[in-house]
Length: 184
Image 1 (cartoon, one colour):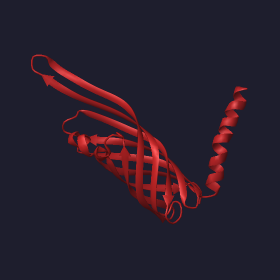
Image 2 (spheres, one colour):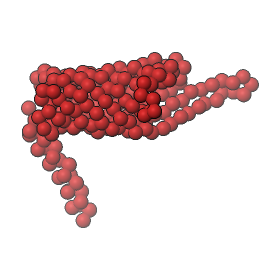
Image 3 (tube, one colour):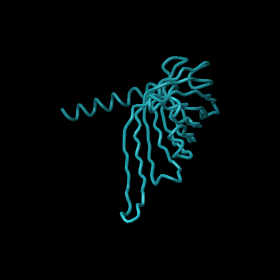
Image 4 (cartoon, one colour):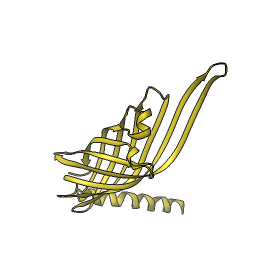
Protein backbone atom coordinates (compact mmCIF):
# COMPACT_ATOMS: atom_id res chain seq x y z
CA UNK A 1 0.00 0.00 0.00
CA UNK A 2 2.85 2.35 0.86
CA UNK A 3 4.51 1.76 -2.54
CA UNK A 4 1.24 2.47 -4.35
CA UNK A 5 0.80 5.76 -2.47
CA UNK A 6 4.38 6.84 -3.16
CA UNK A 7 4.04 5.87 -6.86
CA UNK A 8 0.77 7.81 -7.17
CA UNK A 9 2.36 10.84 -5.51
CA UNK A 10 5.33 10.76 -7.93
CA UNK A 11 3.01 10.39 -10.95
CA UNK A 12 0.82 13.27 -9.77
CA UNK A 13 3.91 15.41 -9.26
CA UNK A 14 5.83 14.53 -12.45
CA UNK A 15 2.96 14.25 -14.98
CA UNK A 16 1.73 17.87 -14.72
CA UNK A 17 5.30 19.21 -14.94
CA UNK A 18 5.94 17.12 -18.07
CA UNK A 19 2.67 18.25 -19.68
CA UNK A 20 3.26 21.92 -18.83
CA UNK A 21 6.86 21.76 -20.03
CA UNK A 22 5.74 20.29 -23.34
CA UNK A 23 3.47 23.31 -23.80
CA UNK A 24 6.47 25.65 -23.25
CA UNK A 25 4.65 27.82 -20.76
CA UNK A 26 6.59 26.96 -17.60
CA UNK A 27 9.70 28.88 -16.58
CA UNK A 28 12.09 28.44 -13.65
CA UNK A 29 13.88 31.54 -12.44
CA UNK A 30 16.64 32.80 -10.16
CA UNK A 31 17.92 36.30 -9.66
CA UNK A 32 19.19 39.12 -7.52
CA UNK A 33 17.46 42.07 -5.89
CA UNK A 34 18.06 45.12 -3.75
CA UNK A 35 15.67 45.88 -0.90
CA UNK A 36 14.98 49.43 0.25
CA UNK A 37 13.47 49.36 3.76
CA UNK A 38 11.13 52.22 4.61
CA UNK A 39 9.61 53.54 7.87
CA UNK A 40 10.77 52.12 11.21
CA UNK A 41 12.47 49.21 9.47
CA UNK A 42 14.50 51.69 7.41
CA UNK A 43 15.76 53.35 10.62
CA UNK A 44 17.54 50.12 11.58
CA UNK A 45 18.44 48.62 8.19
CA UNK A 46 20.51 50.35 5.51
CA UNK A 47 19.55 48.03 2.64
CA UNK A 48 19.41 44.34 1.83
CA UNK A 49 20.30 42.05 -1.03
CA UNK A 50 17.63 39.51 -1.96
CA UNK A 51 18.13 36.18 -3.64
CA UNK A 52 14.84 35.22 -5.33
CA UNK A 53 13.91 31.89 -6.95
CA UNK A 54 10.62 30.99 -8.58
CA UNK A 55 8.54 29.07 -11.07
CA UNK A 56 5.76 30.36 -13.34
CA UNK A 57 3.08 28.64 -15.34
CA UNK A 58 1.06 30.51 -17.98
CA UNK A 59 -2.51 29.30 -17.44
CA UNK A 60 -4.05 31.43 -20.21
CA UNK A 61 -2.41 33.79 -22.72
CA UNK A 62 -2.37 36.82 -20.37
CA UNK A 63 -2.25 35.22 -16.90
CA UNK A 64 0.44 33.23 -15.14
CA UNK A 65 0.59 31.73 -11.66
CA UNK A 66 3.83 31.62 -9.73
CA UNK A 67 5.54 30.11 -6.74
CA UNK A 68 8.45 32.11 -5.39
CA UNK A 69 10.89 32.34 -2.52
CA UNK A 70 13.20 35.10 -1.33
CA UNK A 71 16.17 35.03 1.04
CA UNK A 72 17.39 38.41 2.32
CA UNK A 73 20.94 39.41 3.29
CA UNK A 74 20.68 42.55 5.44
CA UNK A 75 23.29 45.20 6.23
CA UNK A 76 23.12 47.26 9.39
CA UNK A 77 25.55 49.04 11.65
CA UNK A 78 23.18 48.85 14.64
CA UNK A 79 21.95 45.25 14.54
CA UNK A 80 24.11 42.15 14.98
CA UNK A 81 22.04 39.66 13.01
CA UNK A 82 18.93 39.85 10.83
CA UNK A 83 17.59 36.95 8.81
CA UNK A 84 14.44 36.95 6.72
CA UNK A 85 13.04 34.66 4.09
CA UNK A 86 9.71 34.46 2.29
CA UNK A 87 7.82 32.00 0.15
CA UNK A 88 4.50 32.47 -1.54
CA UNK A 89 2.04 31.95 -4.35
CA UNK A 90 0.74 34.62 -6.67
CA UNK A 91 -0.50 35.53 -10.12
CA UNK A 92 0.54 37.98 -12.81
CA UNK A 93 -1.56 39.72 -15.43
CA UNK A 94 0.42 40.39 -18.62
CA UNK A 95 -0.55 43.23 -20.93
CA UNK A 96 0.77 41.44 -24.04
CA UNK A 97 1.37 37.72 -23.57
CA UNK A 98 2.34 35.64 -20.53
CA UNK A 99 6.06 35.55 -19.80
CA UNK A 100 6.70 38.51 -22.12
CA UNK A 101 6.17 42.28 -21.73
CA UNK A 102 4.68 44.41 -18.95
CA UNK A 103 2.95 42.69 -16.01
CA UNK A 104 1.17 43.46 -12.74
CA UNK A 105 0.98 40.85 -10.02
CA UNK A 106 -0.22 40.07 -6.52
CA UNK A 107 -0.08 37.19 -4.11
CA UNK A 108 0.14 35.88 -0.59
CA UNK A 109 3.29 34.82 1.13
CA UNK A 110 4.70 33.70 4.41
CA UNK A 111 7.57 35.68 5.92
CA UNK A 112 9.92 34.41 8.63
CA UNK A 113 11.92 37.07 10.47
CA UNK A 114 14.75 36.72 13.03
CA UNK A 115 16.40 39.71 14.72
CA UNK A 116 19.28 39.71 17.22
CA UNK A 117 20.88 42.68 18.95
CA UNK A 118 23.44 42.74 21.75
CA UNK A 119 23.63 45.48 24.39
CA UNK A 120 26.45 46.00 26.85
CA UNK A 121 25.25 47.37 30.18
CA UNK A 122 27.99 48.63 32.54
CA UNK A 123 28.39 46.46 35.66
CA UNK A 124 25.75 44.00 34.40
CA UNK A 125 27.38 42.54 31.28
CA UNK A 126 26.02 41.82 27.84
CA UNK A 127 22.31 41.45 27.14
CA UNK A 128 21.06 39.83 23.93
CA UNK A 129 17.62 40.64 22.54
CA UNK A 130 16.18 38.10 20.13
CA UNK A 131 12.96 38.46 18.20
CA UNK A 132 11.58 35.75 15.95
CA UNK A 133 8.23 35.93 14.19
CA UNK A 134 6.23 34.72 11.21
CA UNK A 135 3.92 36.92 9.14
CA UNK A 136 1.39 36.42 6.41
CA UNK A 137 2.32 38.86 3.66
CA UNK A 138 0.41 40.48 0.82
CA UNK A 139 2.75 41.35 -2.05
CA UNK A 140 2.21 43.52 -5.10
CA UNK A 141 4.59 43.64 -8.03
CA UNK A 142 5.02 45.19 -11.45
CA UNK A 143 7.69 44.78 -14.04
CA UNK A 144 8.80 43.94 -17.54
CA UNK A 145 9.96 40.59 -18.94
CA UNK A 146 11.82 40.27 -22.22
CA UNK A 147 12.73 37.09 -24.09
CA UNK A 148 16.44 36.83 -24.85
CA UNK A 149 16.63 33.38 -26.38
CA UNK A 150 16.97 30.97 -24.55
CA UNK A 151 16.23 32.90 -21.32
CA UNK A 152 13.65 35.43 -20.15
CA UNK A 153 14.99 38.53 -18.39
CA UNK A 154 12.55 39.88 -15.78
CA UNK A 155 13.03 43.21 -13.97
CA UNK A 156 10.54 44.79 -11.61
CA UNK A 157 9.56 46.20 -8.25
CA UNK A 158 7.91 44.30 -5.39
CA UNK A 159 6.08 45.79 -2.40
CA UNK A 160 5.56 43.60 0.67
CA UNK A 161 2.73 44.55 3.04
CA UNK A 162 4.05 42.77 6.12
CA UNK A 163 2.17 44.98 8.58
CA UNK A 164 -1.30 45.67 7.22
CA UNK A 165 -1.80 48.60 9.65
CA UNK A 166 0.97 50.76 8.21
CA UNK A 167 1.24 50.55 4.41
CA UNK A 168 3.94 53.24 4.11
CA UNK A 169 6.52 51.53 6.36
CA UNK A 170 6.93 48.40 4.24
CA UNK A 171 10.02 47.39 2.23
CA UNK A 172 10.35 47.75 -1.54
CA UNK A 173 12.41 45.27 -3.55
CA UNK A 174 13.90 46.07 -6.94
CA UNK A 175 14.76 42.80 -8.65
CA UNK A 176 16.17 41.31 -11.83
CA UNK A 177 15.69 37.63 -12.58
CA UNK A 178 16.64 35.28 -15.36
CA UNK A 179 14.05 32.62 -16.19
CA UNK A 180 14.67 29.47 -18.16
CA UNK A 181 11.78 27.68 -19.95
CA UNK A 182 11.65 23.97 -19.12
CA UNK A 183 11.46 22.98 -22.78
CA UNK A 184 12.63 24.58 -25.98
